[in-house]
Length: 329
Image (cartoon, rainbow, N blue to C red; front, top):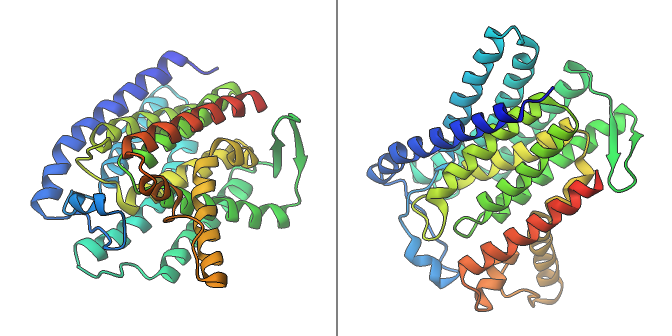
């Protein structure tokens, strides 16, 4: 039985841990001159962000490690080692996505290699971690390959040889979609916090305690980070944070057997991705652009919207979609 008081307590604890880490780590990033590098062809208003500390996703990674480890110890001492045994692998596998982003950020910002991690290597790393996670779900936890159909409120059984590649594609698509959503102060962190909250509530409704606990840790962590990431941002998450959040969202959705629900609750990242695909394809074919700039949030910026307006509107849309998503389950 899930204890909502416990979930609330660990959310608050992870929030406080994230805040403390932000206070400690941001000055270190500033001192090491690990600052944002803005594109010359990006929105001109972003040039003033040049040099703002980035790679702040390490705040979320360390906060997750501290809080989940503490929760694991708590469950072990209570004799509930089964929950602890399920929590730690989820932590390791989701942090793996963040580490891929960390390597990319480290090469670009610390080693001053402007190209960062080669796209092929980055995709290979994400692929390997995705395969490891899906194999863990199917053969480690022996989770059945059933998938929940939103609104119809029923499961369909998918053969393992179809489910494994499908699940891997879900992870890769989600991590890249959240990565593309990161580009405005507080946008990716705000939208992700709402989506993860929705998945956590579903975990509680489905009585999946490890997801209820894990999600509460992540929500608290992201909200703590958001305190430093809101406009004007004192720190950016970098690929370290955006790939981590994408990994968390896809990992939780697959664990709960609701990956199809992401099309609804994560529609903003989906649209951000589609805007890039459409822009590139249309430009290659015609030499013209449909959007003023892709991803989609830049189009609205160049249309006269302030960053804060984009974040508020996109977050409200996500909140409404998450309410619809909860109704769909």
